[in-house]
Image 1 (cartoon, rainbow, N blue to C red):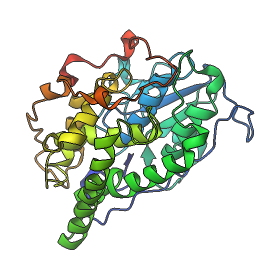
Image 2: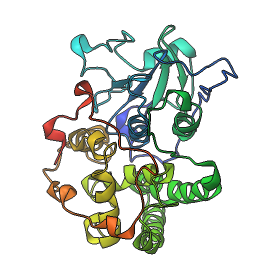
Image 3: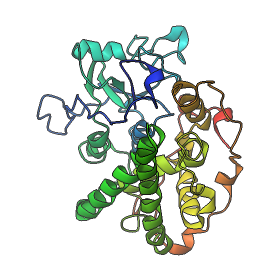
Amino acid sequence: MGSRDDGNKAYGRKAFKRSKSHFTDRITADGRGGRPVEAGRYRLVVSRACPWASRAVISRRLLGLDDALSLAVADPIQDDRSWRFTLDPDGRDPVLGIRYLSEAYDKRETGYPGGVSVPAIVDVPTGRLVTNDYQQLTLDLATEWRALHRDGAPYLYPRALRDEIDMVMADVYEDVNNGVYRAGFATDQEEYEAACAGVFRRLDLLTPRLARQRYLVGDTITEADIRLFTTLVRFDAVYHGHFKCNRWKLTENEVLWAYARDLYQTPGFGDTVDFDHIKRHYHQVHTGINPTGIVPLGPDLSGWLTPHHREELGGRPFGDGTPPGPVPAAEEVPARGRP
């Protein structure tokens, strides 16, 4: 999720087109391309409001990369200069020493296209951006960072299932992950209706699949589940009203609501979600859609903690592995962001 060159007022006022990631360097186990996996060398910069960044937060936690890859959480309210570190003392990231994520981008390249987006990985010694490739970043965490995974880490991108995972993720990305944005930022009725219809068409297609199996691909959590979850967890809070994806609420789809609750209650998912950041970002930053900046009081979040009964479908969340341990104290979501 990026900040636009012409400011936050542009959201909802011009045709929406998701920028491709401009910085696509990869951090690899063998260091090909000059970016080797190395504990402590890199910093992951995220916003808890952003679904693309939230994928990386969940993956990092499930894989136990907390100590190897440090985490910087930006203020959910970005300004026209980009994501800010105003949640930190003195308004600076304590590791990188910068006030704005754009400073790490500028150290890498000037005049780059596509704006300043999260997730981003920054090289700590140089303070330069390494990658903002949100599509590849989590796949590399699952595969290239294996030597630094915790004992009992799940296989989020197992080789035997990659073709099916890729196919499911491509459909979910086009119609759901990106579809809600195309609906929300549409500038004419026809564009909005096509995008909104696509969102619910794909959700309707996923419903019978998830009625018969606990997870999207195979009997364990994979990258595909992470990518669907980050949209579903935001659905009723922002996409239903703010983005006008309102054919039905997630809570009205028995299967998808139970699936989302199952993941939310799985260590590594719900404990990374900050509903306060999510609601404030969408409603206060997208002034082209919500010019008053008023943040709704609802929805009631207590349902996220209710029984889901998905274990009756079988499945093993972490396969032969184990859940991650407690959230590090410094990374706990404040009470106002939780049910």
